[in-house]
Image (cartoon, rainbow, N blue to C red; front, side):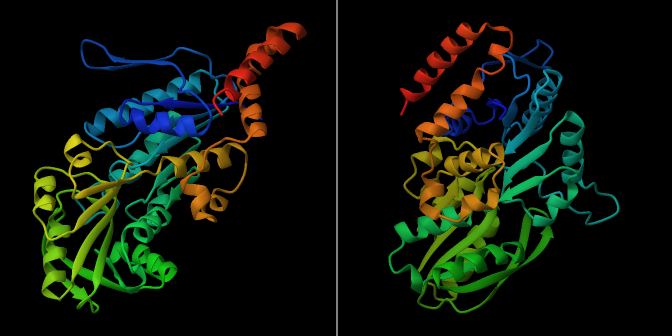
Length: 365
């Protein structure tokens, strides 16, 4: 088995560090900086020859810099003779630009998919694409992880009598997610029909379903300006909802979004850590962050071990709290880390390196 290497970009270092730690690894040493003219500089400080490389880079400000840095990192790994390169992108950039509303607009999500392939990506691992049809933009495998299991776990833990609540899809794109969650929890489901004037401006929302006297959870894939969520909360309160929660996968929170949500009718606003959140979110009692690092770590291990990614979602508890802690698994990782170094070593030197590396890995258990 080729050795497993995790390389982090500059977008979400803490996320990548936790993923690597869950895999029993350290982040691969790299040099990241910028030249005086603003061009990105990237260099691998150790070899990745023959390795399965997972490059972790999400989409956050400055988005274009983060995307370009990812492409540079991928090409560097390709030129360094990595066996496979997987782009781990918790939030896929430009995912909302997935169709032409007129003949004068691009399909930028398709362009990004092409750029990744040209740079040398063999596979993409992401979470909660804006539409599942985006997977068809790729000529390489694209694993679109669903956040349902993390959302369900949070609801069971923090909302009393959750079987009596109503799961509401914020728009038609969120209906499938809302339906899947409601079926697993045994709850009711409702949805909103949105009328837009512009891409980021909602004109009106029409509620389909009964929420009177109910606790309501609004689910969506992404919150940006928060206009949609705040208007949804108003419509739900008008319809008689007793308590209202919002759970989104990607908390972008652009402009005055945090202020609007803090003053909104929501009891809590919940998002995952697919992108780094400012201290205003972490320290605000009205916001809650769900950690999905272990979901990505488990899926990375399954991919590396040639096991179906779908199998990782069969057990909620084992997935959300997964760590590579079994001795035999740590030994396999640590031994694969020294295979390349031993190519030109004598037998005694090779055995000594293997013993030392394995001991260092097992000390972390």
